[in-house]
Length: 279
Ligand code: IPE
Ligand code: IPE
Ligand code: MG
Image (cartoon, rainbow, N blue to C red):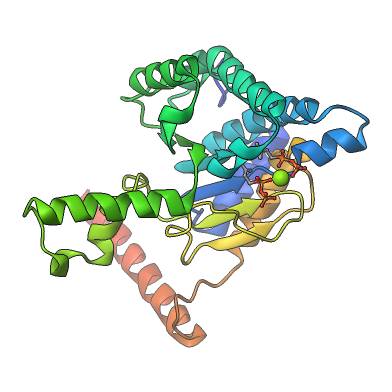
């Protein structure tokens, strides 16, 4: 099923409207929260919330791909989530297995490249195998980079990076003075991802819960009051538009940013003119 051919007229209009607004976030990271509360409010067991959340995952992945977002990272299971009741953890692992089995063909067909971050060795063997196969199968794809954060925590990745840097120092590969921010980031599991530009959290909670701690340093945070199973593409569009209306200052002042944006616009315009003249 080709996602681009599947777009409704309304979708096309909305996605074009967003594209015209300016620069999309390169990397969108999502804390998919509120499955349990959604289920309880419906009088259902918590696992029904996780199941319903899968439909949101499918819709958001598709919408990001259609809109042209290059990187989407989904926080699906944290290291701390292992402390939940065994039945819920088992249910979540089964759902993950189901998702990989049922979706991989369509993801591959739509040029999605799968990545993972997290302590994968803690996951059930069958899930590890499916993940490995999905990563290998989609490795040549050039569309949306979909990263699944599984058994992941930001502090865990930072500590792991420090340990590996320590080893490389001991082996004489690098010296402590070589450790810049860029070098440090290259030891993180997210080394192939750009920093998170937009971090979305659903269910109204205003915390990061150990997600991409290093990578979100200057990311814009957007909180949706909807529970994850209710969060769909229209909510994503609102989050994207909200992001695109923000001024990212990176410690500078507003007039500097305005001037920089103007310079960038002029440079792009000049480049376009040069291209026209060359033809
Ligand atoms: C998010 O929903 C999914 C995972 C953490 C796996 P929750 O299960 O945290 O739902 P709430 O926050 O309890 O409602
Ligand atoms: C964060 O949600 C983890 C995931 C969405 C995978 P939690 O529900 O685990 O976070 P806390 O415990 O409310 O901070
Ligand atoms: Mg939660």
